[in-house]
Image 1 (cartoon, rainbow, N blue to C red):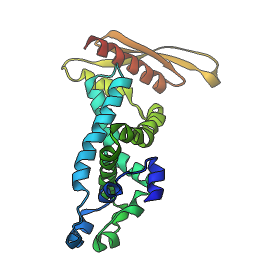
Image 2 (image 1 turned 90 degrees about the vertical axis):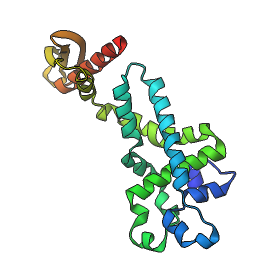
Image 3 (image 1 turned 180 degrees about the vertical axis):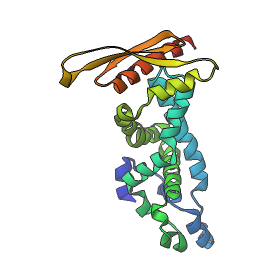
Image 4 (image 1 turned 120 degrees about the vertical axis):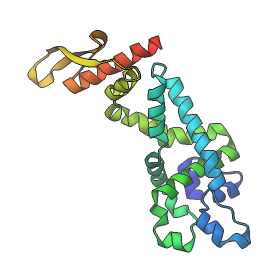
Amino acid sequence: MKTLEEKLGYTFQNRALLENALTHSSYANENRGRGMRSNERLEFLGDSVLGMVVADFLYRTNPNLPEGELTRVRANLVCENSLVVMARELDLGRYLLLGHGEDAGGGRERPSILADAVEAVLAAVYLDGGLSRARTIIQTYILDRAAQEKGANHDFKTALQELVQRESGRVLSYHLLGESGPDHAKVFQVEVQLNGTSIGQGQGRSKKEAEQSAAQAGLERLASFS
C-alpha cells in the first residue's frame, strides 16, 4: 500500500478508504463474514469526480472550443482505455483484492476491473484529502499525458466537420493557397471555406498539417459567433 501511495503522491489519513477502493466485488462476496464492502460505491463517486475535474480543466483551458468538441475530448480522456493506462502506470492490478476465481481468471489485467479501480481510488483520495488532492492526481496521470499527445492526436478537421454538420446544407472545402521554402523544408498555406466563404487559414510542413491548422482557425472563428 505504501508503494502505491508513493506512486499516487498521496498518503491516506484513513487507509481503510484505500483498501475499500481496491476491493473487488468478488473478494467482498467471498468475505461477507468479515463485513467487507466492494469498491462499487466508490467507483460511482469517482466517475463523477473524474468527469468534473476533466470538464473544468477543458472549459478553462479551451475557451474557443465549442460544446460538442469539449464533450468529445472529455469522453476520450475519461474512457476505459485512458483509465487502464493510468492503472498500469500505477501497477494497480497487483494491489487489487480479488476473489479466487477472478484472480485465477486474469482479473488483475482485466480492463474493466482496472478502470473501475482507478475511479474508486480517485474517490477515496477525494473523500480523504479533498478535491484538490484528487485533482492533482488526475492532472498528473490523465491531463498532462493528454497534453503531450494532443499535437499528434487532436483532429481539428473532424471536429470542424461535426460542428458544421449540425445544420444541413453546409459544405466545407479546403484550398491550397500556396507554398514556400526549399523542397526539403516547404511550408504550405491552406484556407478552409464554408459554403465558399473563408472561415480560416493555416500553414504547416505538409498539406495535411496546414489543413489541420486551418480547421483549428475555423473552429475558433465559428465558436466566437456561437
